[in-house]
Length: 256
Length: 248
Image (cartoon, rainbow over the protein chains, first blue to last red):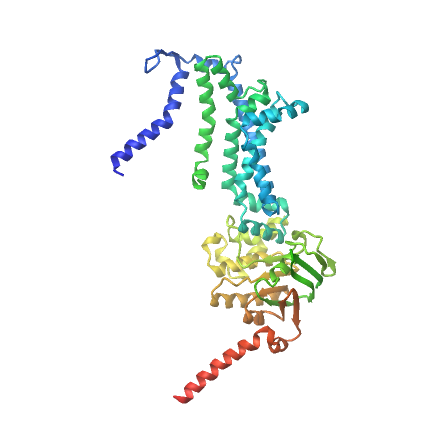
């Protein structure tokens, strides 16, 4: 490929990736933007100021989303790491792995509709705990699938050797398995965080609007025909994953 | 010291261990020879607690151990691969067994440094496993097992991946340390010479059972051991070269 074509392609791809975010940024600072103008007629910071006001609770929603996604990623990664090790040693490994794919056969909204009745009976609908558990139902099997290929013969043998050297279960995880698995654990934490962070169907259905996570707020502003506040909420939705990607790039790029 | 009584293990229809019984005395090294798939590794894994037998009993110093998890048996199982922990340096690899026992830092340092010195690895304590040669890795793996004073060492072809010279060095070092610390060992190998060099007694695994020879001469006399065939081969070579020399 000629260098000039390569450069053009690079610029095109970069524009393609950056343009939606740039458009959102502009929209979040515009007070009026009429067709067919390429840029807004006037700029304002009121939408961002409003997002901090308690009436709009966008920042509160962001904090809630962060707490839910962090909790879901931590619980599902840990649970999946432990259970995938057990699965690797189990005779029923393939059958269990097949079951882990099941939640992904359904779309999240269909899954939410299917499990909704159980949440109502348990009294978990409309609660943060209910949303966390609903997110866990898809983040956990995803992490199990991610870890399923990780437990190779060498790692299991090292674990067995550590046991004969006197290490109990907790010590083996602490001193051998977790340190050896830092890369894949970081990847699982990141991916499950994203699953929970961007989840709309389950959050909306199980949360019943009483758990105002950011994704629910974005859709609410869109349905209220308020594109400026929707742009602010969308930008806040993009920011934490970008930050995580930057922080974890060393691990993630090595694993890709 | 180790009593194995009527041990049984099958994988589906295939019987790997068939009422296997034997004993090992304190400080004894028992070499176990056998073909691939004869059940040698299964036997060691059952003793270490990494596999469960179908039936039978194992007593260590008179105490039944089959119900105990691997970490409470006092038997260390060493594989053909050294399996040093790649995230730990030589010192920490060696000290692993002491750290999990939560011994005082001073004692850990003293015991580890002493053993590093004894194994000729004192200058390498800060190195990572990938910076060591095969022989050096084997020394660290061996030290990591010895440092916790195991009641029984289970070695599964530990020198199988070393070149012949390093292998001989390791065999000498291994014998010296085992004699010094009076460690009881089950040494699995498929190398006839290694079995003869290392073992106080020699056993042969066949059809799920272990035949232990009281004397080396008994082992050599048994045609099934393959020792006589091996000796005849080398004797033949020697006589052939003698004859050639005479003719010239």
